[in-house]
Image 1 (cartoon, rainbow, N blue to C red):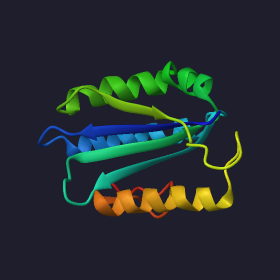
Image 2: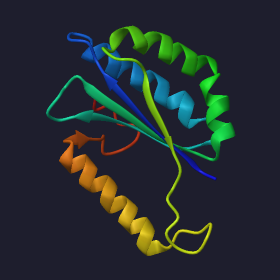
Image 3: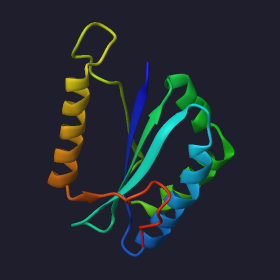
Image 4: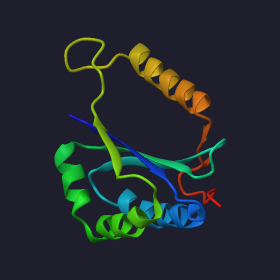
Length: 136
């Protein structure tokens, strides 16, 4: 079953650039992992200290493998002293709305609508392209 990761990072004042740089440095090697289906970073429009990473994995084993890789360990060691809270990572699975084990096109569209609503509600922005370096 696919796994979705939502990670929240609120930078300590003055560390916004360092958090953004650490995120960008970690994205490319993560995208190369065979179990990573997608990964994107976001920054709040209203709170420049607030960042998110959303990633999608083949399964939980793929994410567990990712968590132990050197670039992931380096990222966490680099970013943890820069944020003002304990690491905040949520693991989630897709809610199944159609037949057991399937997702209908209608429900997939509904999921994207919820994501768009949340991005608008929480004033999040994402780069236009996954490789675009839009963070400061």
